[in-house]
Image (tube, rainbow, N blue to C red; front, side, top):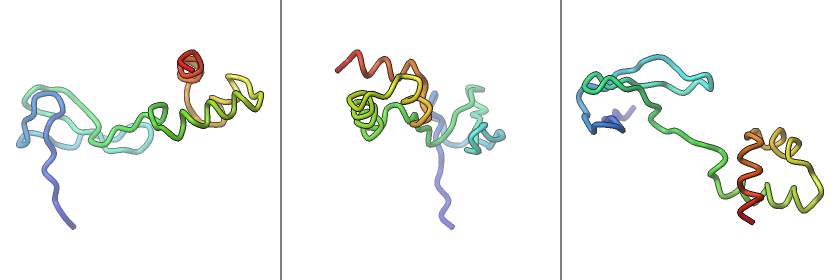
Length: 87
């Protein structure tokens, strides 16, 4: 097992980061004791993935509604609307 030193995303301090529970999705939440802020090491917003953007457009062209697209892709309706306005 390889130990990876995690730096705080806010202040950059590597020495004072400790585990601070888990997120609702099961990812470990970390807390920086220098600045007091919490963060997730590998945060992923599915709405920003290029594959999701492509699927939003494809589903819209196939006649799927906004709520149906959001439910199938497990993203918010506002994300679907945002990308449909951009295209």
